Length: 182
Image 1: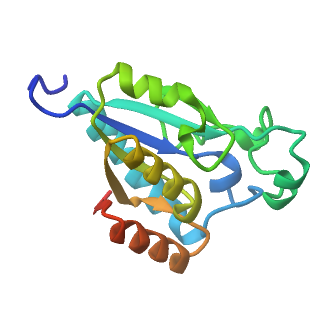
Image 2: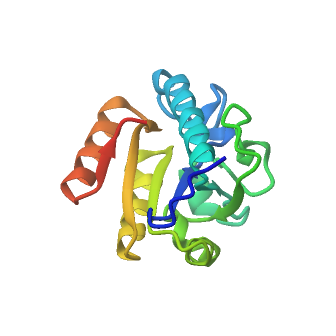
């Protein structure tokens, strides 16, 4: 099923925030509508490639606390733990993956993610996800700080606008992140 080359670096696909509140037209904090279908399609392709290569696949979802009054107001009460909006979007099917919750932009706020990658001897992470300027950026920087190689799957990353997405990706490229088609 996957590759058997033991000398190849161990990789993980990190799927960030493919949740109802960010992808649905009636979500509480949706990405730019023109980006939804392309990002869903690119994420699905990335999942299939990761499965075929035997890579670790990790779904990372926001689960903001219901009592975080200020944060929830700023986020329009999006992705509150246990709410329908926090549910994973079924169009990005990764049922055979591992799920890790987060409550900040940086997915490494949950120590389970670092431990999972360490246990899997992961050296290389490929990122796909939502809000290029926030969660994708924070997670990419944290992954680099942990000594991981980072690859951003450009076609599988969305944001609130095309301009915001482009600016965030350009900033990450200037910081040495590898940008590749999704």
